[in-house]
Amino acid sequence: MDAVTRRRFLLASGVAGGAAIVAGAAQLDLAGLFGTASDAASREDHRKTPKLVVVTLYGGNDGLNTVVPYASSAYYAARPELAYAPDRVLRLNDSLGLNPVMKGLSLLWSQQQLAVVLGAGYPKPDRSHFRSMDIWQSASPSGPANSGWVGRWLDGTNAAPEAAVSFEPMLPPLLAGETRTGACVSIGGLKLPAGVTPNMVEVLGRREPHESEMQARAADSYANLIKIDQLIQGATATGAPSGAVVRPDIPATSTGGANVLSEQLSRVAQCVEAGVPTRVYSVSLGGFDTHAAERVGHELLLGQLDQALASFVGRLARTEAGQRVTVVVYSEFGRRVRANASDGTDHGTAGPVFVLGPQVAGGLYGEQPSLTDLDDGDLKATTDFRDVIGTLLASVLEADPARYVGGGYKPKMLPLLVRD
Image 1 (cartoon, rainbow, N blue to C red):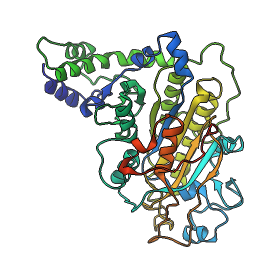
Image 2: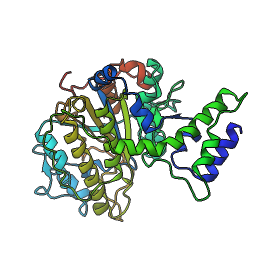
Image 3: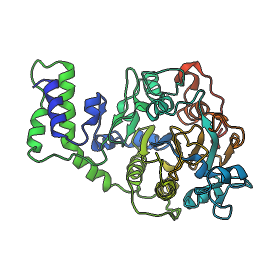
C-alpha cells in the first residue's frame, strides 16, 4: 500500500490524531515522548534545562478588557457597555488593572511571577486572522515565510522532533522549519470511527518491501497511531516525581472546571516532571473573536485562561524541573478601541503579552498605547513583538535571536527573566 493510499484512508476515516500526518509533520506518541527520558542521567539533565511554553489565544484577544486602562476617560467613552469600573479591576498600578476574573494571574503578579508586555504588535498591522497569526508565528512581518521561529531554531540546532512538541490537533506553523519540524501529539489519543478497527490501522502501519523512504515513514506514522491510547493512559498515570517538595497550589478562583487548555498544560507538566528533552511546548485556546455580546464570552475565556495558567504555574513551583519553565501568552492582534453596535469589538492591532513563571521578573514592560492618539481608530503598537520573541530565544533557549527572528530584525532584549 503506497503513501497516497494510506493518506486517503486517513482522510476518509477521520482518524483523530492524524492531522499532522496529512501535514507531513513529525509523529510522536506520548509513550514515545516519555521514552525519550528513559535514561536516568539524561533525565536529570533535562530536568535542569530551561523550557518554554507558548500559549496561543486564537481569534484576537481584546487586550483593553484584559489589561484594563481603568483610569482613562477615553476608555469609558469608547466602550460604555463593555468597560469595567475602576473598583472592579484587579489593579496592577494606578492606571492599569487585570480583568476581574483573572484572580489567579493577579496573585502571580503579587508574587512577581507575571510580566506584562504592553502594546505588543508589528509594523503595518494586518487585521486578517490568518496573515496576522502567520506574522506572529513566523516572526516575519515583511512577507510570507516558509518557517516558524521555533522551526528555524530546530533547523539551526539539528534538533530531534521531540525538542518541540504541540499538544494541539494540528502542528502550528510556529514549529515548522525548512528541514526539521516539531512533533504533534494528539491529546485525545486514537479515536477510530465506526467500521475501522485497530487491526486495519496496524496493517497500514506495516512496512512493505521496496517501499520508498516516504512510504516507509507513512507506515511508521500509522504504526504510531496505534500506540497513542496507551501513551495517553501512561501520561495520565504519571504524577509528580517522588521526593518532590510539595508547595500549596495557587488557587484557581475563576469560573469553570477543567478545560482544553488545562488538559494541554497538564500534559506539559507531566512531561517536564518526567524529564523529557522537549525544550518548547505549544498549546492554545480559541474563541477570542468576540464581535458580539463580548462581555460574557470574553470573561468565560479569560476565566479559563486564568485558571489553567495559575494551576500550571502553581504545579511548576513544586519541582526543580518546573521552576525552569517560562510561559508566554499572546494573540494575533488586539481589538479596536471603540465597541461596535453588537456590544462586541472588531479586529484591531496591538495588545498585551504575558510572560510568567518562577524565572520571570514580574512587572510592566513597555508603554501602554495612548487611547487618544490612535491610528484610524486602532492602538499604535509601542513594543515590537519580535523583542519578546528574541528575548525568549536568548534567555530560555540560549540561542542567537538575530539568527532565528525573521527579516533581519535585531531584537532588543527585555529584562523579562530574573537571570537576565
